[in-house]
Picture 1: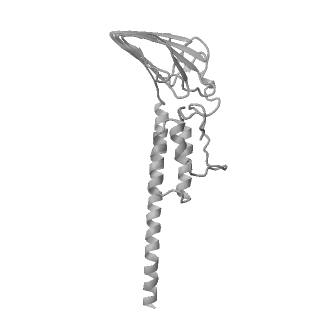
Picture 2: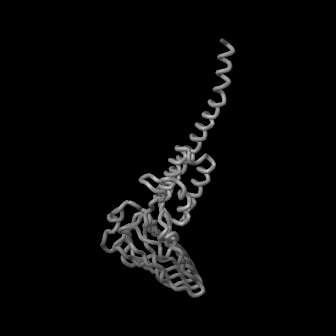
Picture 3: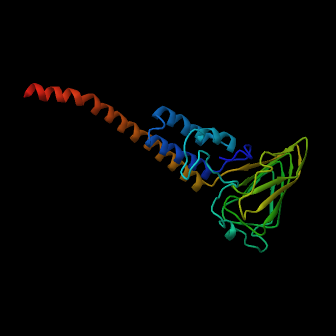
Length: 250
């Protein structure tokens, strides 16, 4: 685990690498069941490299040494996986308008180099998780007057927020997260008056389902390992008793 940038966000792949080390340690007897469960919970709750690093610090890692390597980029981890989503062209939608109503841009669509949105007494959702991108840098311009908008980006996308709020505000929490190799850059700009523009990073439903299944499998593995330990203790406890019975029968 790198100590160079403990504040950087860890990826799902990083958490899975740590979980795999813990499973190996349980199988080898380096951790008991209580320690394994505690560290596994901490692994899936960890958000940064600094939170992941102590979990395996005292455990050997395959390949030598006790320091687990992690990626320095956000998911998706596979190199080149963004290549098919930078498609060029003009974009499939350039505007989103909500006047005392709402609008959505989500699912499979192409984000243009500049997407303009306006909300007055209304709201809008601009979801980029399954979108393609017309260029490696796109601008999402949001003007919210007594209304609100929410921009949702997938893991791996770099975000820069430049918007200005007057009696309103722009969400800067996702500013500065490192980009995955080949991922696009999203600049969120605009103006909010008595309103707000939120920016959040969320995995797709399919990715969340995959993580849920992996965690369910990990829980099942804990249960199976616990059952094997119980059966092993039972066999050890019954062994001497059975031998005494055999001698008595003879």
